[in-house]
Image (cartoon, rainbow, N blue to C red; front, side):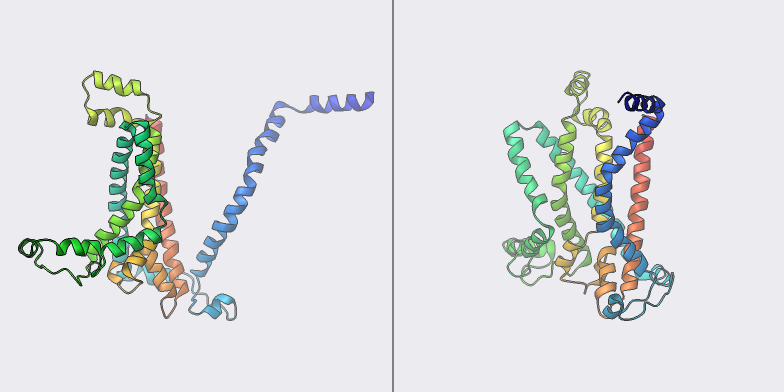
Length: 328
């Protein structure tokens, strides 16, 4: 017994602090292993499959099932997509749509968050619960409701425009009867309605996130700025916004990712993939992959290009935020 105790004491004495620290530092990584395994199975493996498919010419389900050999084409799919003038049109649509939606979502969400912060506790809880209904509504369900609102025969918007005086409607819009008017046929009007749908579904998350960040801002700083004569606008930009810069950075990145890959809302409003003038990258990838004749390799290459764009945009913005934090 004495020998065993002595050996244990000698082993403990030989264990240096650095070795003990290295053993303890492995614990967080071991705890993360189950989460990393799930991410690898649900995210990285499908992404790897898409990247691999983009290097082959796949035009049939039999090839996907392994009944036929996958013809290797290398970067030919990427060359065909990047050399297509229509791809540049789709990319322009995607970038302009994403920028407009990120700006509108951030502005509206921030204003609602500021409003909730000024309301009383009960009223703020009630308003926040009502606002979050839009966020909790599935994208498919909400889009179907909006499509009915703009229906050309029985939609609410059509009904309201038909209630306008004929003289006013004709003078302003050039028509008095709106029954049968295709709200989704004009590309510009289609993107305006799509923007309305996406912003309506996205701003509640921004509002609640901004509200949570506002709760962490010391009220003494805002009160001191007001005492010095600063108005609400100056208080927000000089006190509130600098302290919430990391929150806004994360929200901008998330909004950019969501708005770049909008698919459900566009697919439902457009009624499929027939109108190519309103294509964006997500639905373009889907149309190339699944519309007859299917071209799974081309669709996969578009999906990879979209992923790379999102990674670059996110990386650049995160780098800018981190640099601003280091400078401050």
